[in-house]
Amino acid sequence: MQCQQCRASRYRRYTRRPAGAARASLCLTLMALLPILRFPDPRLRTVAKPVEQVDDALRALIDDMLQTMYEEPGIGLAATQVDRHVRVIVMDVSEDKSNRKVLINPEIIAASGSQLCKEGCLSVPTVFVEVQRAESVTVRALDRDGQPYEFSASGLEAVCVQHEIDHLDGKVFVDYLTPLKREMAMKKLAKLARAES
Figure 1 (cartoon, rainbow, N blue to C red):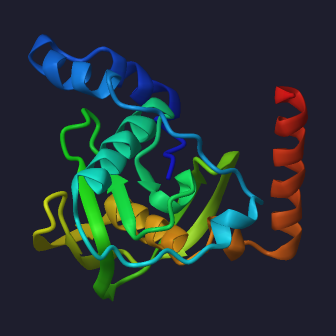
Figure 2: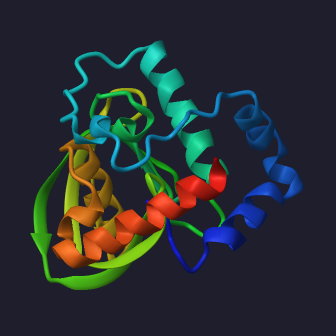
């Protein structure tokens, strides 16, 4: 997921880490950036499979996803978006990138309220649309080491986790649009593709 208001400024904050974070920044630069699938790539419609084993290979994927998310820059990334069809999400909605979360086999076990939020997506660049989401959610998942945990999220963090779980289920946020607005988004993406070619 991408946050419209801080799309550019978050990248600048990330590249100017304080001295105390130098080691973490160095570790990130040694990881691999992963190509992100762009809508309407049919692979984005693949329903991700549950992770059966948390091992070094999965942790390497998680680390690469984190680097990719920060470099884009985004606040959330699902494995589906990098053509790995397992139920893994990374996210960090903090301003200083100090609250990264790894969610393996995430599930929303409670939801309440309603909010309308303008969302963006790394798989649908330059498009930002309002989507209705739950205001608060409680999530159960495994962490990077395969340990179960739960957390509650509200506001932007709740939006982000719902957006990313949609990806694992083969959904893209433009699915929530009316046919007319979806067609407009497609034209915008086609224009961007022509400009990049």
